[in-house]
Every structure is written in structure tokens, then in C-alpha cells.
Length: 206
Image (cartoon, rainbow, N blue to C red; front, side, top):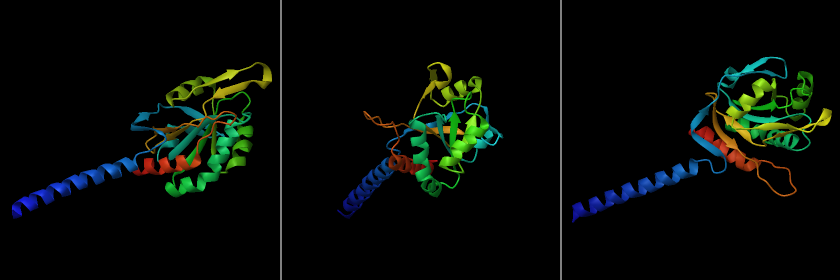
């Protein structure tokens, strides 16, 4: 009888331990982002930052990078997204001190280095704006799982682009994509609380 109780007790302990592990593991998984358990490789690229310095894949190493594609003439999505990232930047840094926010301009014709420098500083002095020709931007955007397209004619053309934010891990590979919430009559935007929640989980899983 004593052996029976020991056996049953041991079995219950194993079951409870397994259930607890599953629950903890489930809670640690990102809930909202498109998370890649096997990070996607980013191919080598060369862009220029808003200070005129070379920015390549090397500058992604050792950092958690939140990458957003946009442009300074964007009427709604870009300023909203960058403003929201500015609001939570201290919280992002609290989760991981090596966090950085990158704006990749999809309008190299109008977004000069000087213009980008003035624009990005408005949101946060630590944010980095990047530019390059379309011959570099198109393959880079595709590699990141995003797309953009120019619409309209003349100087007042618009650039259609994704409102998603790509998260790159310290190895320089894509860890996740945060997608915006769509609502009729509202600017597509990413919920900051959800982003912070998943960001903390992804960093912890790294």
C-alpha cells in the first residue's frame, strides 16, 4: 500500500510539473506579433543614416531594432507610429537597454539627409532615419517582409507602404513583425501596450 501511494504521488507530481511547464511556456509566448521561432535572415545591405554615416547589417548586431518604413511627407501613419514609439521608448529601453528605433525612408527623392535629420529629431533624438536608392530599398523591403509603392504624379505623389514594425534581434535577423490594427475611419496603428507586452516576451525568449 505504501509503495502504491508513493507511485501515485510521484505520478501526480510529474503531471502537475508538466502542466505547470506548459502553462508557463504558453504565457511566455508572444500573443499579438507574428513571431518567428526560427528568425529570418536579413541579407547584407547598405543604407545611409540621417547623419550621413553608412548603416549596414553590422549596425544591427548587438541591438534590438524596431524597423519602420515610412517617409517625411506621410500625412498620417508615419507621424502616428513614430509618435507612439516615442511615447513608449523609455519602456522599450527598460525592457532592453540596447533597443533602437529605425525609420527607413521609402521616398529618397524628397527625403534628403537634412530633411530626415530634422524630421526624426522631432520624435526622439535617439531615433535613426535611413535612406537609400530604390535599387537598395526594394530588395531590402522584400527581405523584411514589407512592400511599398509610389502612387500619383508630379511632386505631390504619395507612397503606399506598410504600417507594420519589424523587430530585428541582436543577431541581425528578423524575430517578429508587429502588425497594425485596422478600424474604419481611423489611422492604422499598433497598440502600444500589446507591443510592449510581446516585446518583453520576445526579448526573454531570445
